[in-house]
Length: 280
Image (cartoon, rainbow, N blue to C red; front, side, top):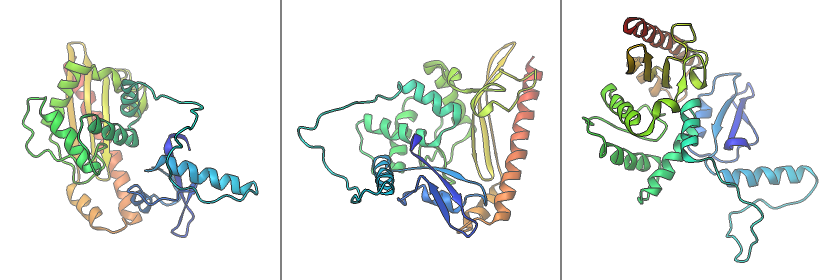
């Protein structure tokens, strides 16, 4: 039950088994339909409390104890608190989210933030819109065309320009010490095994982002002449439209998307290496 995630494993017959069992069919269920053959996929659980209760009931039944299915109820008025657990500070959670590119944590933090702003959102799209308005109202930039559908960016409908991402990088640098929260090339997080050569290691602090047939890298370059900001966005729009038109993406196009991603990352890394060499 760690991190409220379930590992979905294909059984070879078009079905998927969850470990622990997944008994809900929330928005993340669509991820299962595009899981790579013979490759488990970890997906987030929407209702972590009920998920834990259902799986606890399963374990109890396996011990031979008869127990009814759990139902959501109200806490008794005189219930005694046995223990409480507080999360890490928000800044540390944000660092974990950025370092390991954790989409579930991004969605959770986004939902909490929109609630703290005092506006009620019925779904992820509304919550993302609330945050987008709050952010664009604080940062002077041309925000035309910005379209944010959730907090993780995992939507083919999301749109943002390189200039808009650059504005966010500047704001994060000036106000929140963003570089120190990001993965470092050749050292940590999603960049641990990238840009790890002598001329690049520990000189790139950035955030990765990818969908099938779309890939980006944005962040900061540490050069002998000072700090530089950069944004690289690559996409194969025609193949992405073909991918989106499929009810269930084929094995062939999923393999093609994986191969495309390898090439896109190679291009990003080569550009960064050249910039570092040229700036020096």
